[in-house]
Length: 555
Image 1 (tube, rainbow, N blue to C red):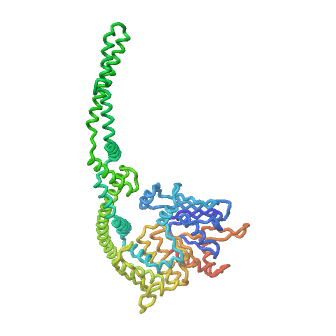
Image 2: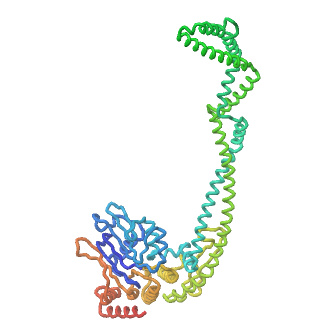
């Protein structure tokens, strides 16, 4: 329940505090005094948007704070979901600075407006005179039936699975589109991949083949140079090796006469050994140089293939071709894996649909069971509210296509008079009838809901006299299940309250301000008498007011 509401610097309010009763709280006041301003301020701590133009003083920030008494731990999981500390006495605060920046707090922890709105909706339900238009909304009508069917857990589970079902459908559509595009390219990419795969590419192949071809094309000149070099070294007596041997022999004969001669002899021997090795390698190399036209043709064809592939794919090397081959292979694999993913997702979606169908059938069955009880309960409250001949008919239509709520369409039908067949409520109900129908629905929902506080903003529009008295009795009964705040202009309803707050406009200051005060019994008598007869109230009006209060407290 809302224990305390503090409003600073909002609209015509400079600074106001209200401490509310746990039962029925009545708010009255003259037109324009600011009764609905209170609701505007309250909406700010329920996560609604704010504008600085509504500030009382443009040089100070606006602060709205609500202190809520929460029973038990039923809302604790909701706090934990948003990583907030749960407290039985929780405070929602909203601060709007002069530059328009807004800050929201729950138990002094900063939160986003969406979080504040999410929690606030579980604390308070505000019903204004315009909310009767909700009765014309099929979504609201379905919500009423669901509220009385007591299948919130099943419905939430269904909605979660339905979201997954729709996401799967979207994902399937995307995958199928990608697969279609990929299949259009698949044949060509498969051809390119096969061509590269058949080429059996090797990373360093091109450089090796180009070097070998260069050697083969110059085989004759290479062989001639190697033979000549060999001959100059060792093929006859005038070649280098025999002459070097003779020089070694001559120095060896005199090396005992001078250490320098011995050193030169050793150096010549080393040179001789090195030249013999070179001569042998020249002979070996020359033997392996063979002019092979067939090999030249083979290499030329291979290089032609590599050059053609490079030109076709607009690259300059074999490694780049191999990278393209890998990319094509990956693309083809993705096409295959994409088709596997599509098949897996199709199976998952089909199974999910079967499960949703079963859950939707259960929801439909639950709704069907609750409809008759709802019709009779609403009719009973309408009778209590002065509409004994009123009938409510809830029409349930099961459709084939699943939606976020199952597969039911709900239509609220209404008849105010005997013999008149029920018709859509939007077409046949007057403003006063709509108010009472909504009151009846809210009354029933209150018994099935754990909502702490319900606020009515002039729900009594369009009714008066005995009907107003009856409506007041219905509203008064709501306090058995929850805290109720009722903004009213009818004395019959005002007399029902456990607490009565009077909103007034102070014209004494430099500018008009709105204030609010809790009335004692005599204050209530005077205000209710004014509501009955106008200002100033006479003795008879005050007597009537006392009688209404006495009846209100006894009922």
